[in-house]
Image (cartoon, rainbow, N blue to C red; front, side, top):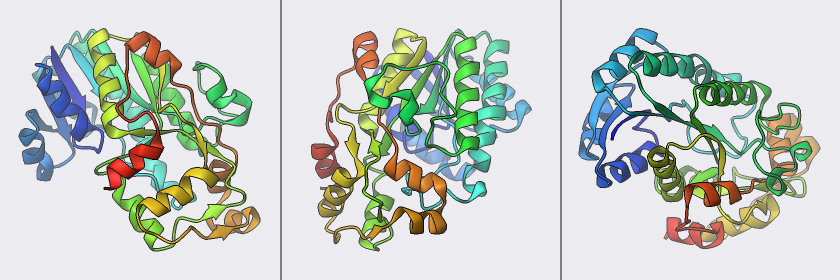
Length: 308
């Protein structure tokens, strides 16, 4: 198949592109600037500069690639900063636009080019208490009222999911990424004592190694999956359990503890909510319907492997 990966130079795209190539697919991957064109070519893709917020740029790139499948991996987010940037609206601004305007541009271009299937990045990190988190199957649409993600971020995710589902595609709700390219900042923040435990660390997170996320995406592409899938590992865990373990794995001191009231003043409600109220996610649907098998079923061994 001819596969068009929008946002192929991102941390997940850099794992997904060579996997697609290895499986015999012809891949066109995009980046926002010329600096990463050689990187994408080195991964085996036809590399293209594309501005996801420019409808004409998207239309031209998709039309030239003539893909069978479009994979939407466009964001402007870095790796997880454990809520340290959650208070700044600018942290989400461009990603919000890519998940709304960018999604619309990409779907319109895909439709014009006769593309039969779309797979898009969504996010499982905002599952909230009212949703039941990992105890319940995927729900459509995302529950904005119970989400622990910032409202504007949750709204943009919901837009992506609704638009892709209406087009008959698949939305993949990835857990928190770790692995090469995604763990370095986590390790640095822990070593610099900038990744604190908030409150009792009772929020439950679901993690996913980039390799497993890429394999799930490959399966969604090849099976032409439809609907919403949680792409997370087998072991949702409270912050109070995984955060000290992650610090130990990177050779850092145990994380500092900050009471919720102080963290709310310093980092805002979102950081407190994510660290104290998140519920994690369940991967049963992806396993059953995609035939997905995890190489890193638990963050416990995964953290060690990724940070070795």
